[in-house]
Length: 476
Image 1 (cartoon, rainbow, N blue to C red):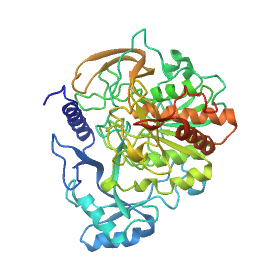
Image 2 (tube, rainbow, N blue to C red; image 1 turned 180 degrees about the vertical axis):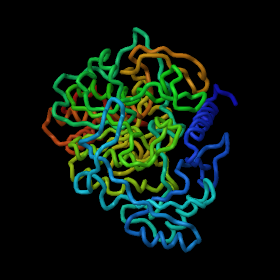
Image 3 (tube, rainbow, N blue to C red; image 1 turned 90 degrees about the horizontal axis):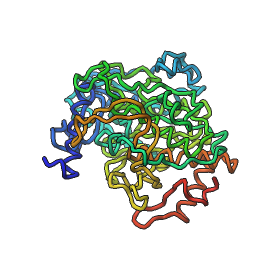
Image 4 (cartoon, rainbow, N blue to C red; image 1 turned 60 degrees about the vertical axis):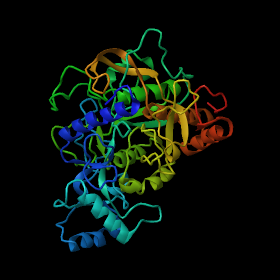
């Protein structure tokens, strides 16, 4: 394998990350590209899912359960654990999520949340996908295209099929400028923004003034996992993906300095589901967690939701866990802005590919072309700067774990240079918040006006519609 070749390097990164993932999460299946068996080293992978579990549309759940039993499988239907009250989140500094339940009429479960079937005795990696295909062939999709059954997918905290941002964080020099440029102080005033990611490093506000007064957050633990031992213990280095949510918050606050920002950590369960140990949970997210956090944010009045997580699904069907979320967004006059993913493909990356989600692709360093890693097609409704951005990060040492830099030690002093559609996403979310405050618009109206401006005046040849804070006709 020649690590100087981009395809070989990407494959080496994927192999290393999947080895880590499967060691830390033995209950997660990694399939071949066609999801008809386990993935072999050196091959592309198809999907990640939790073994022995099916998500089923509630309108066909009883029929599906009978169907599965009729094929000789043992089936248990799991009742949904109640979501916790968004107003009683526990201690944001520790991530303690022991809260009070909330009922369905107050921001919790709704009638469209999928049923969960446990089917333990199936063939590893292939049994659940095969069963889902049989169910779907029998019961079909609903009017919105949601399948009758799907695996319980694992999505990625950093949205890319090689399970990482487009790059590892890089150290900055004294000549590097923080991006985006600092916006007018009043921008974002009154807008409520939820960032669903890895949480927040509170100490970053001491050296990045634009992060001051962020008080509603889940803590982002910097060093809780030993990558070499694959164990829940510190190893003296900043964990991979730690600081990701802080960087995103920094990007957003540079454009909309007065926005009220609420930063959630997606590995915190609002439902008691993932409870395995060791739990290197910064890398993957149960697909059910993301809609739960969206529901909680909407309940609290946060109408701009910035999400830098997602993944592929079986046969490219829309993720069943998102059924009903569009209605909630409409009811709350809210918008979901999501990263397009970093696999340089037009293949659907969910939820960015959903037609009612604003997927954001990344521009390259020159901001004139699509970044070579960015997903395209239906995943990217619009493109924004996302390559070699400099913004808030942790202080400490980071050991690279991706080829060709494996083992390299990088030293950080509160800023980093990073690339990925993860970081283009908060640019667009911030522009929505900024326009809301300046034009006194709600989130859907502000987003619609921004996309109109992108479509009419900022279409780049070979790219498509773009949005940047530097544009002067965005009403901010």
